[in-house]
Image (cartoon, rainbow, N blue to C red; front, top):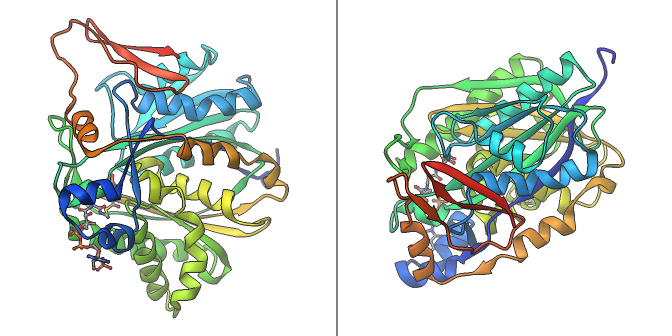
Length: 391
Ligand code: HMG
Protein backbone atom coordinates (compact mmCIF):
# COMPACT_ATOMS: atom_id res chain seq x y z
CA UNK A 1 0.00 0.00 0.00
CA UNK A 2 1.25 3.47 -0.82
CA UNK A 3 -0.05 6.73 0.58
CA UNK A 4 -2.15 6.96 -2.60
CA UNK A 5 -3.80 3.52 -2.41
CA UNK A 6 -7.53 4.23 -2.67
CA UNK A 7 -9.82 3.09 0.14
CA UNK A 8 -13.58 3.00 0.01
CA UNK A 9 -16.75 1.00 -0.55
CA UNK A 10 -15.97 -2.32 -2.19
CA UNK A 11 -19.51 -3.70 -2.22
CA UNK A 12 -22.93 -2.58 -1.00
CA UNK A 13 -26.15 -4.48 -0.40
CA UNK A 14 -29.44 -3.46 1.17
CA UNK A 15 -32.39 -5.24 2.73
CA UNK A 16 -35.74 -4.18 4.07
CA UNK A 17 -38.79 -5.75 5.69
CA UNK A 18 -41.42 -8.35 4.83
CA UNK A 19 -44.32 -5.86 4.84
CA UNK A 20 -45.13 -2.52 3.25
CA UNK A 21 -47.88 0.00 4.00
CA UNK A 22 -48.77 2.18 1.00
CA UNK A 23 -49.41 5.84 1.84
CA UNK A 24 -52.78 5.58 0.09
CA UNK A 25 -53.79 3.15 2.87
CA UNK A 26 -52.46 5.53 5.56
CA UNK A 27 -54.26 8.48 3.94
CA UNK A 28 -57.56 6.56 3.97
CA UNK A 29 -57.21 6.42 7.77
CA UNK A 30 -55.77 9.88 8.50
CA UNK A 31 -57.95 11.71 5.96
CA UNK A 32 -54.85 13.59 4.79
CA UNK A 33 -54.82 14.58 1.11
CA UNK A 34 -52.56 12.04 -0.61
CA UNK A 35 -50.78 14.95 -2.33
CA UNK A 36 -49.23 15.86 1.02
CA UNK A 37 -47.62 12.42 1.23
CA UNK A 38 -46.76 11.88 -2.44
CA UNK A 39 -45.67 15.44 -3.27
CA UNK A 40 -45.40 17.37 0.02
CA UNK A 41 -43.00 14.94 1.72
CA UNK A 42 -42.21 12.73 -1.31
CA UNK A 43 -43.20 9.38 0.22
CA UNK A 44 -45.32 6.63 -1.39
CA UNK A 45 -44.96 3.64 0.95
CA UNK A 46 -43.21 2.56 4.13
CA UNK A 47 -41.51 -0.68 5.08
CA UNK A 48 -43.02 -2.31 8.18
CA UNK A 49 -41.14 -4.96 10.14
CA UNK A 50 -42.88 -8.29 10.72
CA UNK A 51 -43.14 -9.60 14.29
CA UNK A 52 -40.09 -11.80 13.64
CA UNK A 53 -37.91 -9.11 12.04
CA UNK A 54 -35.66 -6.50 13.62
CA UNK A 55 -32.36 -4.69 13.01
CA UNK A 56 -30.44 -7.98 13.38
CA UNK A 57 -32.42 -9.92 10.78
CA UNK A 58 -32.28 -7.01 8.31
CA UNK A 59 -28.54 -6.59 8.94
CA UNK A 60 -27.79 -10.28 8.38
CA UNK A 61 -29.96 -10.29 5.24
CA UNK A 62 -28.11 -7.23 3.87
CA UNK A 63 -24.64 -8.55 4.73
CA UNK A 64 -25.01 -12.21 3.71
CA UNK A 65 -24.55 -11.54 -0.04
CA UNK A 66 -21.28 -9.66 0.66
CA UNK A 67 -19.91 -12.57 2.65
CA UNK A 68 -21.06 -14.99 -0.03
CA UNK A 69 -19.32 -13.02 -2.80
CA UNK A 70 -16.07 -12.07 -1.06
CA UNK A 71 -15.63 -14.60 1.75
CA UNK A 72 -14.84 -13.85 5.38
CA UNK A 73 -11.03 -14.15 5.42
CA UNK A 74 -10.27 -10.42 5.32
CA UNK A 75 -13.10 -9.19 7.57
CA UNK A 76 -11.61 -8.44 10.99
CA UNK A 77 -14.07 -5.77 12.13
CA UNK A 78 -17.86 -5.44 12.09
CA UNK A 79 -19.37 -2.07 12.98
CA UNK A 80 -23.16 -1.94 13.23
CA UNK A 81 -24.74 1.50 13.42
CA UNK A 82 -28.24 1.85 14.75
CA UNK A 83 -30.54 3.94 16.90
CA UNK A 84 -32.99 1.01 17.25
CA UNK A 85 -30.75 -0.84 19.64
CA UNK A 86 -32.09 -4.14 21.00
CA UNK A 87 -29.84 -4.32 24.07
CA UNK A 88 -28.15 -1.75 26.29
CA UNK A 89 -25.03 -3.87 26.61
CA UNK A 90 -24.56 -6.48 23.89
CA UNK A 91 -23.79 -5.19 20.39
CA UNK A 92 -26.42 -6.26 17.83
CA UNK A 93 -23.53 -7.03 15.48
CA UNK A 94 -22.54 -10.01 17.63
CA UNK A 95 -25.81 -11.75 16.67
CA UNK A 96 -25.13 -10.85 13.02
CA UNK A 97 -21.58 -12.18 13.34
CA UNK A 98 -23.02 -15.47 14.56
CA UNK A 99 -25.76 -15.71 11.89
CA UNK A 100 -23.14 -15.13 9.18
CA UNK A 101 -20.58 -17.56 10.65
CA UNK A 102 -17.86 -14.90 10.72
CA UNK A 103 -14.48 -15.91 12.20
CA UNK A 104 -13.96 -15.59 15.97
CA UNK A 105 -10.93 -13.38 15.20
CA UNK A 106 -13.22 -10.38 14.61
CA UNK A 107 -13.92 -7.23 16.62
CA UNK A 108 -17.59 -6.28 16.72
CA UNK A 109 -19.03 -3.04 18.04
CA UNK A 110 -22.21 -0.93 17.86
CA UNK A 111 -22.32 2.82 17.16
CA UNK A 112 -25.02 5.39 17.85
CA UNK A 113 -25.65 9.01 16.91
CA UNK A 114 -29.12 9.13 15.36
CA UNK A 115 -29.06 8.92 11.56
CA UNK A 116 -25.42 10.03 11.38
CA UNK A 117 -23.86 6.87 12.86
CA UNK A 118 -23.61 4.96 9.55
CA UNK A 119 -21.22 7.66 8.37
CA UNK A 120 -19.19 7.48 11.58
CA UNK A 121 -18.88 3.72 10.99
CA UNK A 122 -17.73 4.27 7.42
CA UNK A 123 -15.13 6.84 8.49
CA UNK A 124 -13.81 4.61 11.29
CA UNK A 125 -13.61 1.73 8.82
CA UNK A 126 -11.56 3.85 6.40
CA UNK A 127 -9.11 4.55 9.23
CA UNK A 128 -8.76 0.86 10.12
CA UNK A 129 -8.13 -0.10 6.49
CA UNK A 130 -5.62 2.72 6.15
CA UNK A 131 -3.68 1.20 9.07
CA UNK A 132 -3.79 -2.30 7.56
CA UNK A 133 -4.98 -2.42 3.92
CA UNK A 134 -5.09 -6.22 3.90
CA UNK A 135 -8.14 -6.02 6.18
CA UNK A 136 -11.75 -5.30 5.30
CA UNK A 137 -14.40 -3.84 7.57
CA UNK A 138 -18.05 -4.86 7.39
CA UNK A 139 -20.06 -1.69 8.02
CA UNK A 140 -23.77 -2.15 8.63
CA UNK A 141 -26.40 0.53 9.20
CA UNK A 142 -29.79 -0.81 10.27
CA UNK A 143 -32.87 0.87 11.72
CA UNK A 144 -36.61 0.68 12.17
CA UNK A 145 -38.12 4.15 12.52
CA UNK A 146 -41.23 4.48 14.68
CA UNK A 147 -43.30 7.52 15.57
CA UNK A 148 -46.57 7.78 17.47
CA UNK A 149 -49.59 6.79 15.38
CA UNK A 150 -51.49 9.83 14.08
CA UNK A 151 -48.48 12.11 14.66
CA UNK A 152 -46.96 14.17 11.81
CA UNK A 153 -43.90 11.89 11.82
CA UNK A 154 -45.97 8.72 11.25
CA UNK A 155 -45.94 9.10 7.47
CA UNK A 156 -42.12 9.13 7.47
CA UNK A 157 -41.66 5.74 9.18
CA UNK A 158 -39.70 2.98 7.46
CA UNK A 159 -37.01 0.36 7.93
CA UNK A 160 -33.92 -0.94 6.12
CA UNK A 161 -30.36 -2.12 6.54
CA UNK A 162 -27.37 -1.39 4.33
CA UNK A 163 -24.21 -3.49 4.49
CA UNK A 164 -20.96 -2.17 3.00
CA UNK A 165 -17.64 -3.88 2.68
CA UNK A 166 -14.91 -1.27 3.17
CA UNK A 167 -11.43 -1.99 1.89
CA UNK A 168 -8.40 -0.94 -0.17
CA UNK A 169 -8.72 -0.72 -3.98
CA UNK A 170 -12.53 -0.71 -3.75
CA UNK A 171 -14.72 -1.85 -6.63
CA UNK A 172 -17.45 0.79 -6.18
CA UNK A 173 -16.47 4.13 -4.58
CA UNK A 174 -13.14 5.63 -3.54
CA UNK A 175 -13.77 7.86 -0.52
CA UNK A 176 -11.73 11.07 -0.34
CA UNK A 177 -10.11 12.28 2.91
CA UNK A 178 -11.50 15.80 3.40
CA UNK A 179 -14.62 15.86 5.56
CA UNK A 180 -16.70 18.80 6.71
CA UNK A 181 -17.95 18.28 10.26
CA UNK A 182 -20.64 19.91 12.39
CA UNK A 183 -21.97 19.18 15.88
CA UNK A 184 -24.50 21.21 17.88
CA UNK A 185 -26.44 20.27 21.02
CA UNK A 186 -30.08 20.52 19.84
CA UNK A 187 -33.25 18.65 20.82
CA UNK A 188 -34.85 18.30 17.40
CA UNK A 189 -35.48 14.54 17.58
CA UNK A 190 -34.65 12.06 20.34
CA UNK A 191 -35.84 8.83 21.96
CA UNK A 192 -35.36 8.38 25.71
CA UNK A 193 -34.51 4.81 26.76
CA UNK A 194 -38.01 4.24 28.17
CA UNK A 195 -39.78 5.02 24.87
CA UNK A 196 -40.29 2.87 21.78
CA UNK A 197 -41.26 5.82 19.59
CA UNK A 198 -39.22 8.93 18.85
CA UNK A 199 -40.04 12.45 20.03
CA UNK A 200 -39.59 15.13 17.42
CA UNK A 201 -39.95 18.86 16.94
CA UNK A 202 -40.82 18.69 13.23
CA UNK A 203 -40.00 22.14 11.86
CA UNK A 204 -37.05 22.59 14.25
CA UNK A 205 -35.61 19.31 12.98
CA UNK A 206 -35.79 20.56 9.40
CA UNK A 207 -34.19 23.87 10.38
CA UNK A 208 -31.45 22.06 12.32
CA UNK A 209 -30.71 19.79 9.34
CA UNK A 210 -30.42 22.84 7.05
CA UNK A 211 -28.21 24.70 9.52
CA UNK A 212 -25.99 21.62 9.73
CA UNK A 213 -25.65 21.61 5.92
CA UNK A 214 -24.30 25.15 6.04
CA UNK A 215 -21.99 24.13 8.89
CA UNK A 216 -20.52 21.09 7.14
CA UNK A 217 -20.05 23.00 3.91
CA UNK A 218 -18.10 25.76 5.68
CA UNK A 219 -15.83 23.22 7.36
CA UNK A 220 -15.45 21.12 4.20
CA UNK A 221 -14.27 24.19 2.31
CA UNK A 222 -11.84 25.06 5.11
CA UNK A 223 -10.49 21.50 5.01
CA UNK A 224 -9.58 21.93 1.31
CA UNK A 225 -12.53 20.04 -0.20
CA UNK A 226 -13.69 20.22 -3.81
CA UNK A 227 -15.75 23.10 -5.20
CA UNK A 228 -19.45 22.20 -5.28
CA UNK A 229 -19.74 22.23 -9.08
CA UNK A 230 -17.29 19.30 -9.35
CA UNK A 231 -19.85 16.91 -7.88
CA UNK A 232 -21.98 15.06 -10.42
CA UNK A 233 -24.45 13.66 -7.88
CA UNK A 234 -25.49 14.22 -4.26
CA UNK A 235 -26.58 11.67 -1.66
CA UNK A 236 -28.34 13.21 1.33
CA UNK A 237 -29.82 11.69 4.44
CA UNK A 238 -33.48 11.28 3.45
CA UNK A 239 -35.86 11.25 6.44
CA UNK A 240 -38.44 11.84 3.69
CA UNK A 241 -37.29 12.33 0.13
CA UNK A 242 -38.45 15.95 -0.18
CA UNK A 243 -35.89 16.78 2.53
CA UNK A 244 -33.06 15.99 0.09
CA UNK A 245 -34.38 18.72 -2.23
CA UNK A 246 -34.64 21.22 0.64
CA UNK A 247 -31.09 20.38 1.76
CA UNK A 248 -29.73 20.59 -1.78
CA UNK A 249 -31.28 24.01 -2.38
CA UNK A 250 -29.92 25.24 0.95
CA UNK A 251 -26.42 23.86 0.35
CA UNK A 252 -26.18 25.47 -3.09
CA UNK A 253 -27.44 28.83 -1.91
CA UNK A 254 -25.02 28.70 1.07
CA UNK A 255 -22.19 28.02 -1.37
CA UNK A 256 -23.32 30.96 -3.55
CA UNK A 257 -24.76 28.96 -6.47
CA UNK A 258 -28.04 29.69 -8.21
CA UNK A 259 -29.76 26.35 -8.78
CA UNK A 260 -32.67 25.89 -11.21
CA UNK A 261 -35.42 23.39 -10.29
CA UNK A 262 -34.63 21.28 -13.37
CA UNK A 263 -30.93 20.99 -12.52
CA UNK A 264 -31.91 20.03 -9.02
CA UNK A 265 -34.33 17.29 -9.90
CA UNK A 266 -31.95 15.80 -12.49
CA UNK A 267 -29.25 15.53 -9.83
CA UNK A 268 -31.41 14.16 -7.06
CA UNK A 269 -34.22 12.10 -8.48
CA UNK A 270 -32.07 8.99 -8.99
CA UNK A 271 -31.19 8.92 -5.28
CA UNK A 272 -34.78 8.82 -4.03
CA UNK A 273 -36.26 5.77 -5.82
CA UNK A 274 -35.79 3.33 -2.93
CA UNK A 275 -36.29 5.74 -0.03
CA UNK A 276 -39.65 6.98 -1.33
CA UNK A 277 -41.05 3.43 -0.98
CA UNK A 278 -39.02 2.29 2.05
CA UNK A 279 -39.32 5.36 4.31
CA UNK A 280 -36.85 6.65 6.85
CA UNK A 281 -34.28 4.00 7.71
CA UNK A 282 -32.33 6.45 9.90
CA UNK A 283 -28.63 5.39 9.88
CA UNK A 284 -29.09 3.47 6.62
CA UNK A 285 -31.00 6.18 4.74
CA UNK A 286 -28.12 7.99 3.01
CA UNK A 287 -26.63 4.68 1.91
CA UNK A 288 -30.01 3.51 0.58
CA UNK A 289 -29.89 6.75 -1.46
CA UNK A 290 -26.45 5.71 -2.73
CA UNK A 291 -27.77 2.25 -3.69
CA UNK A 292 -30.60 3.93 -5.58
CA UNK A 293 -28.21 6.24 -7.42
CA UNK A 294 -25.84 3.44 -8.43
CA UNK A 295 -28.71 1.17 -9.50
CA UNK A 296 -30.55 3.80 -11.58
CA UNK A 297 -27.83 5.97 -13.21
CA UNK A 298 -26.48 4.96 -16.64
CA UNK A 299 -22.72 5.11 -15.98
CA UNK A 300 -21.16 7.18 -13.22
CA UNK A 301 -17.54 6.05 -13.78
CA UNK A 302 -15.04 8.65 -12.50
CA UNK A 303 -17.88 10.96 -11.38
CA UNK A 304 -17.58 12.60 -7.99
CA UNK A 305 -20.43 12.01 -5.57
CA UNK A 306 -21.11 14.24 -2.58
CA UNK A 307 -22.39 12.69 0.66
CA UNK A 308 -24.27 14.81 3.19
CA UNK A 309 -25.03 12.91 6.37
CA UNK A 310 -27.22 14.30 9.16
CA UNK A 311 -28.20 12.82 12.52
CA UNK A 312 -30.50 14.66 14.90
CA UNK A 313 -29.16 15.88 18.14
CA UNK A 314 -27.09 16.77 16.04
CA UNK A 315 -23.98 15.63 14.13
CA UNK A 316 -23.43 16.05 10.39
CA UNK A 317 -20.67 15.32 7.90
CA UNK A 318 -20.02 16.19 4.25
CA UNK A 319 -17.49 14.25 2.18
CA UNK A 320 -16.83 13.17 -1.38
CA UNK A 321 -16.14 9.99 -3.27
CA UNK A 322 -15.37 8.97 -6.84
CA UNK A 323 -17.07 6.13 -8.67
CA UNK A 324 -14.60 3.44 -9.78
CA UNK A 325 -14.66 2.46 -13.49
CA UNK A 326 -16.00 -1.09 -13.86
CA UNK A 327 -18.35 -0.63 -10.87
CA UNK A 328 -21.40 -1.58 -12.95
CA UNK A 329 -20.30 -5.24 -12.95
CA UNK A 330 -20.49 -5.34 -9.14
CA UNK A 331 -23.94 -3.84 -8.64
CA UNK A 332 -26.85 -5.77 -7.16
CA UNK A 333 -29.57 -3.88 -8.99
CA UNK A 334 -31.93 -6.83 -9.65
CA UNK A 335 -31.70 -8.04 -6.06
CA UNK A 336 -32.30 -4.54 -4.69
CA UNK A 337 -35.36 -4.09 -6.88
CA UNK A 338 -36.74 -7.43 -5.77
CA UNK A 339 -36.07 -6.58 -2.11
CA UNK A 340 -38.49 -3.70 -2.53
CA UNK A 341 -40.97 -5.44 -4.83
CA UNK A 342 -41.25 -8.71 -2.88
CA UNK A 343 -42.76 -7.00 0.18
CA UNK A 344 -46.34 -7.93 1.04
CA UNK A 345 -48.73 -5.00 1.12
CA UNK A 346 -50.67 -4.78 4.39
CA UNK A 347 -53.79 -2.88 5.40
CA UNK A 348 -53.98 -0.18 8.03
CA UNK A 349 -55.37 -2.50 10.75
CA UNK A 350 -52.50 -4.99 10.31
CA UNK A 351 -49.98 -2.14 10.45
CA UNK A 352 -51.48 -0.87 13.72
CA UNK A 353 -51.37 -4.35 15.25
CA UNK A 354 -47.69 -4.64 14.36
CA UNK A 355 -47.01 -1.10 15.61
CA UNK A 356 -48.61 -1.85 18.99
CA UNK A 357 -46.64 -5.07 19.56
CA UNK A 358 -44.23 -4.98 22.47
CA UNK A 359 -42.00 -7.73 23.80
CA UNK A 360 -42.94 -9.43 27.07
CA UNK A 361 -40.64 -8.45 29.95
CA UNK A 362 -41.29 -11.40 32.28
CA UNK A 363 -38.29 -13.50 31.27
CA UNK A 364 -40.56 -16.33 30.06
CA UNK A 365 -40.35 -18.37 26.87
CA UNK A 366 -42.11 -16.41 24.13
CA UNK A 367 -41.93 -17.43 20.47
CA UNK A 368 -42.70 -14.88 17.76
CA UNK A 369 -45.21 -15.79 15.05
CA UNK A 370 -43.57 -16.91 11.79
CA UNK A 371 -44.30 -14.00 9.44
CA UNK A 372 -41.12 -13.22 7.51
CA UNK A 373 -40.12 -15.18 4.43
CA UNK A 374 -36.59 -13.71 4.59
CA UNK A 375 -33.45 -15.76 5.26
CA UNK A 376 -33.17 -14.87 8.99
CA UNK A 377 -35.77 -14.46 11.70
CA UNK A 378 -36.10 -13.27 15.28
CA UNK A 379 -37.54 -16.47 16.75
CA UNK A 380 -38.41 -15.13 20.18
CA UNK A 381 -37.29 -14.47 23.72
CA UNK A 382 -36.40 -16.98 26.40
CA UNK A 383 -35.03 -16.11 29.82
CA UNK A 384 -34.59 -12.50 28.58
CA UNK A 385 -32.36 -13.79 25.73
CA UNK A 386 -33.12 -13.05 22.10
CA UNK A 387 -33.23 -16.10 19.83
CA UNK A 388 -32.39 -15.86 16.14
CA UNK A 389 -32.54 -18.53 13.46
CA UNK A 390 -31.99 -19.06 9.76
CA UNK A 391 -35.31 -19.61 7.98
P1 HMG B 1 -46.34 18.28 8.89
O1 HMG B 1 -46.01 19.42 9.78
O2 HMG B 1 -47.59 17.54 9.16
O3 HMG B 1 -46.36 18.69 7.36
O4 HMG B 1 -45.17 17.22 8.92
P2 HMG B 1 -46.38 20.14 6.69
O5 HMG B 1 -47.65 20.81 7.00
O6 HMG B 1 -45.08 20.87 6.96
O7 HMG B 1 -46.40 19.67 5.16
C1 HMG B 1 -45.33 19.02 4.61
C2 HMG B 1 -45.19 19.48 3.17
O8 HMG B 1 -46.31 19.00 2.42
C3 HMG B 1 -45.18 21.00 3.01
O9 HMG B 1 -44.29 21.32 1.97
C4 HMG B 1 -46.60 21.30 2.57
O10 HMG B 1 -46.74 22.50 1.83
C5 HMG B 1 -46.87 20.10 1.69
P3 HMG B 1 -43.03 22.29 2.23
O11 HMG B 1 -43.59 23.58 2.70
O12 HMG B 1 -42.22 21.63 3.30
O13 HMG B 1 -42.35 22.34 0.91
N1 HMG B 1 -48.29 19.78 1.49
C6 HMG B 1 -48.81 19.39 0.32
N2 HMG B 1 -48.24 19.22 -0.90
C7 HMG B 1 -49.06 18.78 -1.90
N3 HMG B 1 -50.38 18.53 -1.75
C8 HMG B 1 -50.97 18.71 -0.56
C9 HMG B 1 -50.17 19.17 0.55
N4 HMG B 1 -50.44 19.44 1.84
C10 HMG B 1 -49.26 19.81 2.42
N5 HMG B 1 -52.28 18.47 -0.42
C11 HMG B 1 -42.77 16.86 9.14
C12 HMG B 1 -43.92 17.35 8.24
C13 HMG B 1 -41.55 16.65 8.31
C14 HMG B 1 -42.50 17.92 10.21
C15 HMG B 1 -43.21 15.54 9.82
O14 HMG B 1 -43.37 14.52 8.86
C16 HMG B 1 -42.24 15.06 10.87
O15 HMG B 1 -42.28 15.46 12.03
N6 HMG B 1 -41.33 14.12 10.48
C17 HMG B 1 -40.31 13.56 11.37
C18 HMG B 1 -39.12 14.50 11.55
C19 HMG B 1 -38.29 14.62 10.31
O16 HMG B 1 -38.33 13.79 9.41
N7 HMG B 1 -37.45 15.67 10.24
C20 HMG B 1 -36.52 15.86 9.16
C21 HMG B 1 -35.22 16.53 9.57
S1 HMG B 1 -34.50 15.74 11.01
C22 HMG B 1 -33.71 14.33 10.35
O17 HMG B 1 -33.58 14.18 9.19
C23 HMG B 1 -33.26 13.31 11.35
C24 HMG B 1 -34.16 12.09 11.49
O18 HMG B 1 -34.01 11.24 10.37
C25 HMG B 1 -33.83 11.36 12.79
C26 HMG B 1 -32.40 10.96 13.06
O19 HMG B 1 -31.44 11.67 12.79
O20 HMG B 1 -32.26 9.90 13.68
C27 HMG B 1 -35.63 12.46 11.56
